[in-house]
Amino acid sequence: MGINRPLELSHYFLEILSTQLRCYHQERIPRHGSIVVVSNHRSFMDAPILMAALSTPIRFACHHYMGQVPLLREIVIEQLGCFPLEADKNRQKSFFQRSQNLLQSQQLVGIFPEGTSPMVNFTAPNQVGKFQRGFAHLALRTQVTNLVVLPVAIVSLEEVSASGLPLKILSLFDPSEPLFKQSGLHPLVVYRQVAVFIGNPYLITPEHQEKYQGKQAKNLVAELTEYCHHEIRSFIQKSS
Image (tube, rainbow, N blue to C red; front, side, top):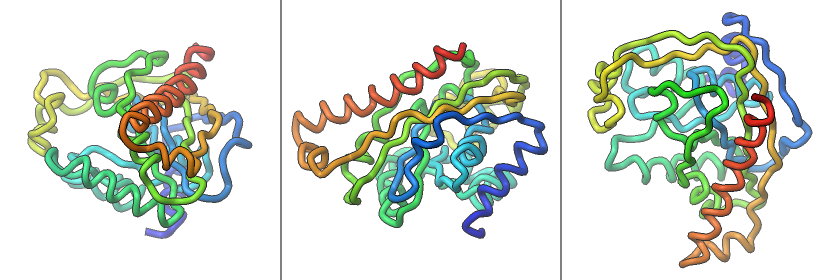
């Protein structure tokens, strides 16, 4: 996989689907250093959308089953450069190890902190779920200089919804995921028009890293998680 292959495929993917993309506040994107990109998540198009909007390849953490399904694995892992999380018992450890290695090599890591739920359950375009805090722990414990957490909002302006595979089929590839045990079909959201809003970067300073211990660590993680959630939610609510 060439270094720019994921970006080229992202643009091609949007062209094939005739998706119109607008991006706002691109001047906020850091041009150097390690970046954790945090965004809301409703569609299989979100990773290519963000790469096209930021004009750079992003290494996204993705669900374990995506590394198990033939064809999907070739597209998502080998072509777009996403990295699947391990099975349930090793998920957290593998997430931190892979992400820290990428950040230490000055690559962008993308995380969807809402998790799997908005992908497998119907979610309204103006809805943002609760954020899991793994990305905040990652940013605060990774030993790199001037790491930035960049909140980015994906705002659907026009979309088409369809139904995909039965969810229970996906449980064959990841039996540990409880969401795959429910009845119904996996929803597919296709953006016709979509806007991407770049939030204000959150710089992780040496002072943050020094305070990442004990009770202070819990407060820092909560603060960073809420900051990103508020930035993203504000853009989506203002655009709805």
